[in-house]
Every structure is written in structure tokens, then in C-alpha cells.
Picture (tube, rainbow, N blue to C red):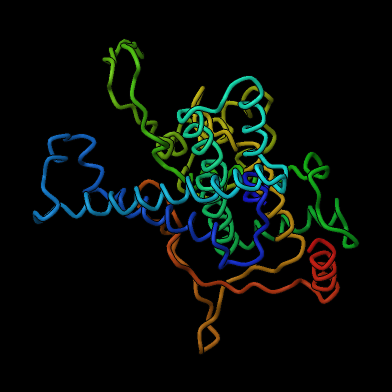
Length: 339
């Protein structure tokens, strides 16, 4: 969906060329963002270390990551530009930007770079964070089956068994809303957000921040603040229930996990919609539980996550199967209708 919105490109398989570009770029960026790699941001003299010198692997990884990101930026953009010239381009965010910027003036190289990054961020970053959030949701549901059963009961009561959940159902599913808020809080996809440099001197709580200072928003610490979230290490959707509107707004992880102010993630609303629809439909159609070993004993996964720019859940096993044959048939029919 994100690829179609961004570039007008329909993805038919995991082997899709554009998907591979995005996956390679994301993998390269994560590998380049190890602890050693990020030290160069705090100790700039490290950038002068030759690539052949022991300990300079972070520079080689950064070069590879840059090449992969460049490929992700350029290849889909060039393809759509050719389609626009030929009159065969499908409507997308990219074609909209190209049309708007070309109405009065010729698109400059600077414009092209801005367009490439804006569209690429919509798919590359937002899609990766969507995947991380949904994997965190799966892990949480495996570890907390009572939460999953409660969410299923709510959807069964509101939606029924003759159709699948839709966005119009969202206001009527408050417990699901609490579950997803707790997923965002429990494991924010980008725990330290994206570092930014201060463009001019500023003061925050009597602390002077000089121009050029790198500022990092510690989202993970914000979502673990015990004064706002008692017993923060416990997965507890009920913490968001029965709050007055002002408190609910202050406590909502949406205020932080998508970034802040002018640097707010441009795909926030779309990404949130996709996550809600995916989670709601999984709950409505699937039973998710712990996997079992050869002896039939349940395997309880560990709530463990990778450290780095993104907090990806570590590999875990689970058992996922349709709730009923009726539900399975409904999903197959829907898929046949939309493809």
C-alpha cells in the first residue's frame, strides 16, 4: 500500500525490485548505525581514520549504506519520471509533487533531491517502523494472551463475524486503541528518534544550547517515565482506560513516537491507519498463541529487542492460525476481489 501511494507502484511479491531497494537500504542503514558508527557523530575526528585502518569498519559500512540509499532514492524516481513523460504514470504522491512543482517553474536539481527524500521517507522509514510496530504487537499478544482475548471479544461484539473491521469501526473499539497505544509505548520503533542539529542558539529549562548542537529526543525514556506510566516495564493497555481528555492527550505515546514539531513524521497518520487496520484484522481473523516444542510444551519468547537506531524485536516463535474456516474463506475471497 505504501509503495503504491508513494510511487504508484503495485507490489505483487516480496521479490519486487523496489521492495528490495528499500530493504537493502534499511539493512545498510541499521548496520551503519552501530554504537561504533555513531561515535563519529560525537567524536568528529574519527572521520579522518583511513578505511584500511583496524576499527574503521564503520566507514566502510557507511559507504555501502550510502550507495544503497542512493539507489533507493534514484531508481523509483527515475522510473516514474519516465512514465510521466510517456503519459503512463499512475497517480501517486510523487506524481503530485512533480505536477505541483512544474506548474510555474522548471524543477531544479535541489527540488529533485527534496522530492526524492520526501517520497522515499514515506515508504522507506514509515514502512520499516510499521513492520517493527506490528512485530511488537505480535510479540506482546503472544506474551499476553489475556489481552488478545479481550481485544477479540471487543471486535466480535462490535464488528461481528460477517465482515472485517474497517476504519469506521475505530471509535467503537476503545480497548484496541489502548492496546496499540501500549504497543507504541512498550517498544517505540525508533527509541532515540532522529538526531537534529540546532540551527540557532536556544534555551531549554535554563540550559543554553549553542548553535550546531546535536539534539536527541530520548523517546524510550519518555515512554518509561514512571510518573506518567506507573510500572513502565509491564505491558498494560488498561493504563489508558477511563482517562479524562486532557490526561489522555498528555499520556498518549502518539505525542512522541512519531517525532516532534516541524520534524513530525510526514507519514504519521497514514502509518497509524495501516497499523490499526492490520492489528484489527489480525485480531478478527487469527488466533495467535505461543508455539510448542517437540514435547508439546509451550515456548515463551523473551521480550527482547535489538539496540540501535531502530528497536526491532529479536527473533521469536509463535503459532498463528485462522480462527475458523469461515474466516479463512472470507479472507481468501477478499484477497481475490482486490487482486
